[in-house]
Length: 266
Image (cartoon, rainbow, N blue to C red; front, side, top):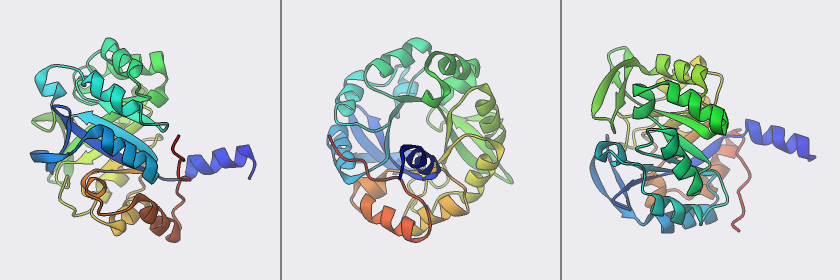
């Protein structure tokens, strides 16, 4: 396959993304953003995921916004040293200075949530400085009747925004990707919220990452087909060795879902 065809195939392929939710320097995982429990050391997990063939890694400092600080830079730096694949960092990023700091620490992209809700122009300013490919707008959503409402501050504050409408606005303002997390499904292993993901995917012309609810291979198949996701993010099913990444990719490929080639560790 020539280089042009390889690039085209890569653009169409789906991605598996591991998420490190970090609190006080340690990875944690809970259910519906609550009852967090220890899930390991972020550097060790990053090293393991890289070797296992994960496509990308996301690190979210889950208490940075609530604590009024940016993500812990020593942790970002230590994790970045283990990787030669796309690395996204989020948590407490409120300004271009905050973004500059995490980029200097080794991030390739930044995920912004609460700060973008307060000041949507931040999306545009980051995109103008670093390119829209570096801007991931994270949307935490919870069902409220027929619609999904947006929540900020680590899921603690309900916003007067519809998730799909906010995704469309974020894309117009310069977001390069949308990371949509179903609070209802988070940590439940009940499957991704495919209707929500499909609605967001239909409203934007940029990649959509689905998060919240991964339990088994069938859930990933569903979110890539019915949910129209470009990437699927998971945490506990990877952290606790419930599903080998290489095996999951083989299952997805067997169902006709194009997967990215496994990256080789340095």
